[in-house]
Image (tube, rainbow, N blue to C red; front, side, top):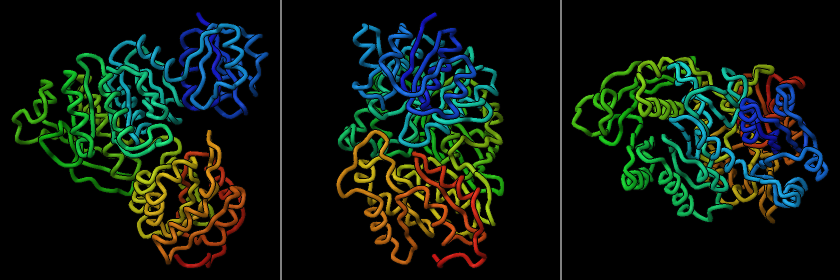
Length: 486
């Protein structure tokens, strides 16, 4: 039994580790700058949670180990107190890597620029259905697990985030790479730096392990080459059959309830673990998969999960049963409700590719309805680095409201703000209504000036913009005639 103190315990990533520490029988304490539903949940489960950071807290608790989130700087008073007292400290990623090393195999890590949280939930749901009793760490709340963590006795499944190079502290038996795109340039500098980090992640897969990857990613060949050089098995997946994929989907379509597809695999891959392209001319039909979430990208996420099941040697048709009816994760195309005929959907999308996918999914889920996108940019550096991509993605909506930038760990960058992004959107779509609302509290009223019954309000961003959607739902009336046309 250890006394473990978590700085930033109210965050999604650190709280999941605190849950595991509690399950291990450790004495858990933690601190954060404000309380939230997560801190309240941990307190009910036995953690001692303090609001605010203080040197005295470390002196009083005298933990055996201090774990801190990536957002906690070296100047944090609790980190400083631990250093003075000689108390060992490690980052969240290092602690996660330690837990993973101690966990039973297979140890499974889900990486990629997009889709990590949903894919991790799908892997967990499939393995639970298959009877594996996994431990699962998720970057969002998943209703069937009662939160962002599931504690089990079997495989260890976690998201592997590339931010701050965190995923390089993880050594998996089975690793998924959903995609590799430009992001986190504040850390990596350029796309070459991003790709190098993913190659290092693949190179860190344990001996005899498996890489599961999206076959159509532009960088899939580079990742396969790394896997081959380390003697690893590589399982590709994608839409449509090909010699570079072991499992694939066909007839992907939106349904009134969500998205569906027919699933196939290379027969030898399912039966004996042979590499794809082993001579099978036709696929083995695995069954129809229908999920209660929209968007073809979710079929790709499901294929990644089925690739993990394949790597585990599981019955893939049974794994499909575990995904059938999958209803999604908090803040991933989550329908919050309807107000005066306007449906409100909240989504964590904070990268151009994610925004475009969410808007496309909304077009499929709500055909013929006007889409109003409220976007809160996340980080000044990401807004600057991906400005044109954001503009083109948001131009796919019918109206856009740009909120103030959620700074998170950053200081403002001169000249980078919501007005800059709004101007680029207007350039990409000159006839579109584009509003700037730096004050989040003003957004519900701004929506009411342009919304019409029948519209869909998309709340987009990784910060606290969900609050604007919730405030809109609890607010006043929308005029029947609504605002100006898109």
